[in-house]
Length: 309
Image 1 (spheres, one colour):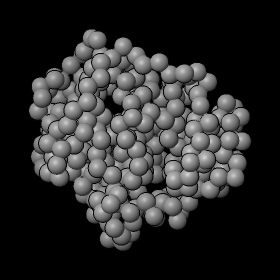
Image 2 (image 1 turned 90 degrees about the vertical axis):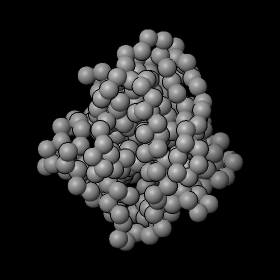
Image 3 (image 1 turned 180 degrees about the horizontal axis):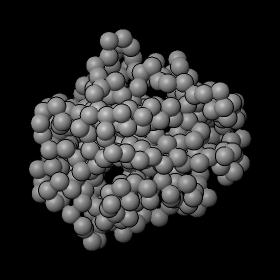
Image 4 (image 1 turned 135 degrees about the vertical axis):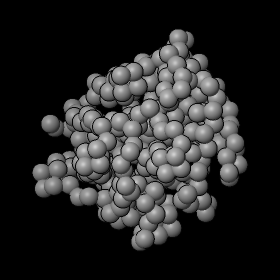
């Protein structure tokens, strides 16, 4: 499929911009990026309550945001936003909109985690430690029925979610009911697109692309090196056997899509139940948009179904 027509019609806002780092640091670039991200309709908060608090962790308190639907089902989800391990927060749509929508759609308690970012000397395993601490806290609250807590994340947050699930398995602790991964970035080196996929991606400007150099920079910033990586830093290299059922959401226009596709094949070989959904015409990070875009709505429905099924 071609790039979503609505998004294609807004690409002109990104003309002349450099890479993602520039868009975050330059005010004019950030303004253009915000215009590109304007949705067809304004998102409206569903009927859920929101509470900010912090939970204990080995490196200090970990901020979390708790979303409670009006009617709760005994289900819960721990959710980890993306941002290349170095960006993102609890206010970004991939955290706030997703947390609100999944709480309402699945009648599930959702806890979004403000894990420490790989900035100012913070590196692996600190973000994983924060995610694990938030999981330990949520699993011990009694807010959800036993065995009804799921674990999920987007992009780099997918790596943290998968690493947390592996840590639970390796320590012989109860596993999540299911794992939800949005456009996961869990391999280094990241697999390359095939020729057709690479040609399709040429429609996107540099600010929406992930080059081999930028991917290497993300990993080096997160771990401190790009060789001899621990398996749970980029967990696509780990033994995945024994993990719970996993749902993988892919973005069609995404340089990192091969990582999610490879992960699905690895789960198949490991005997882990899994399913995938390809968001047609969507670029990486499409959950940073609202459900007025049809594929974002369908992506949220895919995860809500995974939580309720």
